[in-house]
Image 1 (cartoon, one colour):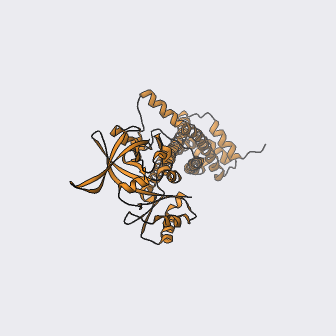
Image 2 (image 1 turned 30 degrees about the vertical axis):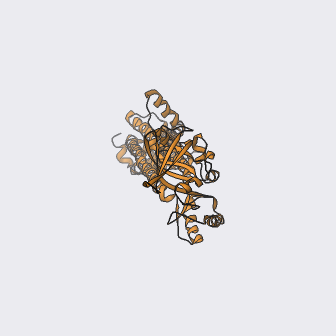
Image 3 (image 1 turned 90 degrees about the vertical axis):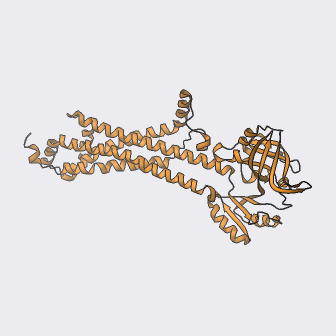
Amino acid sequence: MFRPLALYVGYRYTRARKRNHFVSFVALASMLGIALGITVLITVLSVMNGFDYEIRDRIFSVARQITITDYDNSMVNWQGLEKKIAENKEVVASAPFVIGQGMLTKDGVVQGVEVDGILPEQEGKISEMPKNVRYGSMSSLKAGEFGIVLGQIIARNLGAHIGDKVILVTPQATMTPAGVEPRFKRFTVVGIFHVSDGFGYDATTAFINLYDAQKLFGLGSGITGFHLKVKDLYRAPIIAAGLTDQLRGAYYIADWTHKYGPYFKAIRMEKTMMFIVLLFIIAVATFNLVSSLVMTVTDKQSDIAILRTLGATPRMIMSIFIVQGGIIGLFGTLLGILGGILLALNAPYLVKLLEEIFHTSFISGAIYYIDSLPSKLEFFYVWSVGLIALGMSLLATIYPAWKAAKTQPAQALRYD
């Protein structure tokens, strides 16, 4: 059966038991180094993809994609504006809101909050906040009943539970015979929500009914603005610009990138830099491959000389050692891809097991926005890492193969 000579000899050199065991050890170390580098790189990228996906999912489940306000924060006759917004085909839903600052107090404990007046039936159309209510229900915010839904941290600080009464104090002043006094109102806790400690919602935000907020902040029938949900949130900046041209009024239109854009850019940059840094692990392993092949060339000087006297061309000699290095790189790459896939898929379970063994928590929701290690394996990165590692391995074979091709038969056989 016909076999290409370079492929056959290169494969035999890889399998053969070498006289110099140190050369064999360096070749094995090169293969394992490439495999280890690929395993680490795939695992780290999968974990960072998991962080990106989880945080993105949690942020976008509660974040306002587009917000429209006027410069006085008091829109009147807003029903006409709502109809104009609905004419935009890229807008899925809109919801009016009233926002203001206040202080909640209960049993002598005071907590500053941002009060968000909403219509519960419309809030569910623009965000998943109603699904994050752990106790009670967002639908319990009925006009005129003065119910309030608190963040979990606010409720814990106040010691408030479902059915408890809290007093909301606002900066708006009320004229009384005794003078100017702040406006306050007693509310009943009808819900407690939890998003994540790291986002700040649980510690700063409280929801009341839109009409109760209008009365509390003295807006009459006015509102602060609209929250919008769009078909493609990544087109939100373009849609916001289009709404600016469409509405042609004294409106301030902001999209989610104003608040969260820098954060996601930082994650993307961190992922890119981590990818570049970890590639150096594979580069170090390929340097070991260079050393291994150089020592192999030195060890096989007489074999190379005999092949040259039998008619082998310098190009064929180069091909032999490129094949040998390529086989080492290929097996190291395949081993690394297998290890990376297995470790990436099982990383969350391994971290959880370590947390149980050492009775500690490696990931805090207050810092990382999530309380467990996520991992999302994307095969695009798997194949990219594999191809880059294989390419680096083949590049590492060029110098040793070129050195082997320059071997002079007469000099190599002189002392044999």
